[in-house]
Amino acid sequence: NSLAAVDPAFGGKGRVTGALEGQFVAPSGRFDVQASNLSWAADNQVYRLANLSAKAEMGKGLDGILHINSSLRGLVSPQVRLDQASLNVQGTRPQHNLVLSAKNSTFTLEGRAAGRWKDGVGWAGQILQLSNRGLHAFALTAPVTLEIARQRVVLGSARVDLAGADLALHDLTYNAGQMTSSGEFKRLPLAYLNRLAADTEQIDTNLTLTGNWQIAVGD
Image 1 (cartoon, rainbow, N blue to C red):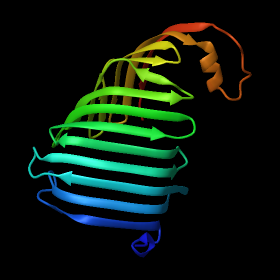
Image 2 (cartoon, rainbow, N blue to C red):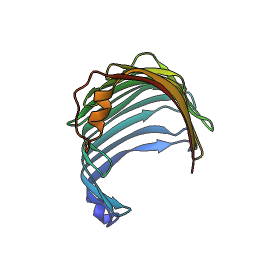
Image 3 (cartoon, one colour):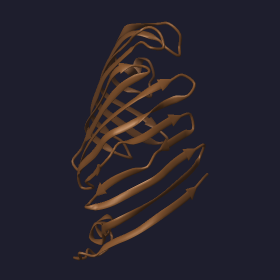
Image 4 (spheres, rainbow, N blue to C red):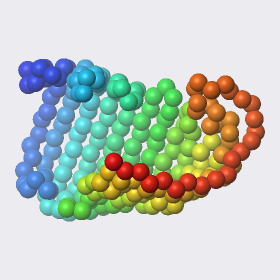
């Protein structure tokens, strides 16, 4: 059905089937969402999505099963463009695995995580694998803890291989508009940093950098 019939601000077609029951904090049931040629505007910016598909099954109770299979194609926004992306969740609310992928002409991102959802607290678990192939290639070299709650995100210590450099993140915390982070890096190629500055004359060098950072920013 045309989404414009529901809200003139939306364009495209969508179909939702299924049924949900139970409490808001732990609904149960199944649903299937299919949409195509979506478009909408926000803050004078236009967003478009060629195709969206999402299927979910949720069991009864706080320990119920949780299965989600979702994918999209052709996302165009002012911030990012995605040729395709997917998110799959398998397990239960208190213990599940997530598989994420996203791709466009400049990157191919893949990730795996495992964790748990606790009502009133949020999500906590580990990023088991995260890598990107493309313009800014990187790879997480060991699992890292992640906590997500209302107005709060905490990423534990992590090691990342970025363009041949060794990045060691000591901590990263976002809390109600305040962000802090610290870490260090070794063997970071100056040529890689030079490529990031599009308006700067490119140089050919094998010089590498070593250093550290400590950041505290807020609203």
